[in-house]
Image 1 (tube, rainbow, N blue to C red):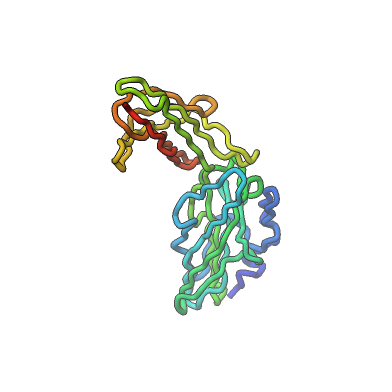
Image 2: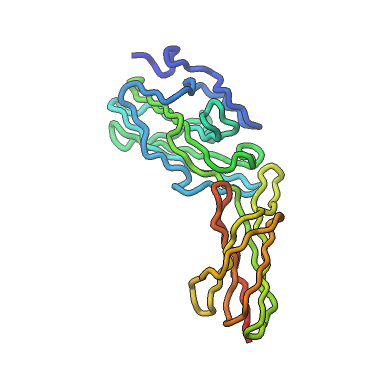
Length: 267
């Protein structure tokens, strides 16, 4: 039987994905054209970051875990997963390899035919993640059996990589007389991975919410949109003591966020 490391599987030294400081060309992996399978090896149960979107701030490196299950009747040989942004791995514009020295996953046997494979990945602004690449990412994966069977998946799992958002709220005046007007201002910003700063997120729908003093539940008062610079401003009538906040539901590229509640004392 041919080896997954042999010529017949088109192993090559260059994958052709180079993004900033990330060079996948150091890897020796099969040519990534489409899903391939030889024999009975399977990959299943891929989990990225515990099933949650990967949210990355403006400057701090984010380390995540990717795990999956590999099965082969002869036992599991080795496995590897690469994270990437693009329609397929060969046309990807950025990505990340495992932090292990050989860029492979660590596979732990569950029984004679099944292993759980796991690896960590670093996503750092300006190195692996860039603002244009916020949104949908994919997991390219390969696994082998001890009998040289193998499976290769171009998209073993899709997941979201999002820009971290921040939101503020300030209700004035305070204290205020019952029946008078309250002005609530704020700003929605999100991480810019190219500049290492937070910039205003324009024309986004944001909910103004209120929580009565003594309650634990916020209710939506109205929905407004951010300005071209991400600012927020609206007015409401003072009725009872409580907390006002803004709430942003998030987008595919940007994380959801709630502002801290700002207390209003109504006299």
